[in-house]
Amino acid sequence: MNIKGKIVFITGASSGIGMESAKAFAKEGCKLILTARRIDRIKILAAELLKEFGTESLTLPLDVRKKEEVFTLFEKLPNDWKKIDILLNNAGVGKGLSPLHDSDPEGWDEMIDTNVKGLLFITKSVSNLMIKNGSGHIINVGSVAGREVYPNGNVYCATKFAVNALTKAMRVELYDKNIRVTTVDPGMVETEFSLVRFDGDEERAKNVYKGMTPLSPADIADTIIFCATRPAHVNISEVVIYPSDQANTTTVKRS
Ligand code: NDP
Ligand code: 8X3
Image 1 (cartoon, rainbow, N blue to C red):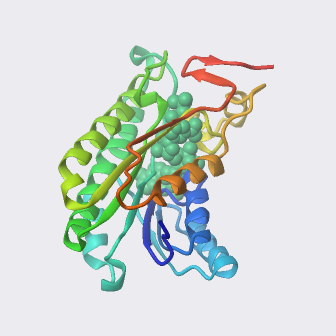
Image 2: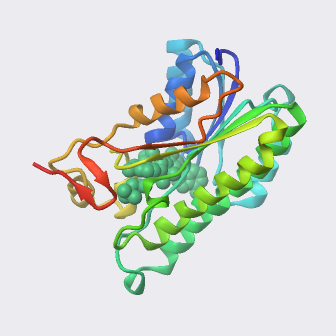
């Protein structure tokens, strides 16, 4: 399906998978609504995409955890940007990697508020617009952590299991409204994810990918574009994508 001219709303466009997906959708000729807390980054991205592909973008600062901020953003969206064709629910964080009994409840709040409640606030708003418009495609970025728990992943895994359940719920509630729902569930992808998870500890973040070849955010963006460009009668429901060096959440080949 040709998605040229379609409006794509992306959460977490300031880094990693969200940023690469923005580039990939721009290459397809889409119009973009780019959101994240780091507005400076998405403004630079929008300027680059305008120069390279002539992409029209709206850049909006947004913390998905803030319910009122999310709802107000959609109320204030200019009318010609309200026909959102594709939603990429990508914003997400991991905080810490230690047993539940040793981990910081503040990190739990951040993960639950961002990965689960943030996704809910955004989805409620966008799915109502899509229902009004009579069509749409919601693509959630889940994780293999939402399919298989690993030691010390506890709350992060729980949030991604929740995303998996919500994806299924959205599909049964929206399929008859001409809205497709997809989850793309990656294994290890080298982004700023580990840096954030380990509170800026670069050494520890680098070690996560030591001696193996992780996926790149562009690999995931490719997959997302594949899902978004299937003919209208095709819904890619779930994609699980691992690096070749990773067999499951605990089995990784390292040199
Ligand atoms: P990055 O840390 O590179 O990007 C995360 C993005 O989420 C940033 O753009 C960040 O923007 C945004 N974000 C975080 N918190 C908020 C918030 N409260 N409000 C709005 N935006 C927010 O990581 P990835 O690209 O790897 O992560 C993207 C998604 O992919 C996440 O959902 C993650 O769980 C998932 N994932 C990642 C994997 C990996 O190995 N990297 C594997 C499987 C899934 P800003 O800080 O500017 O607000
Ligand atoms: C993020 C990747 O493997 O640390 O979902 O859970 S992992």
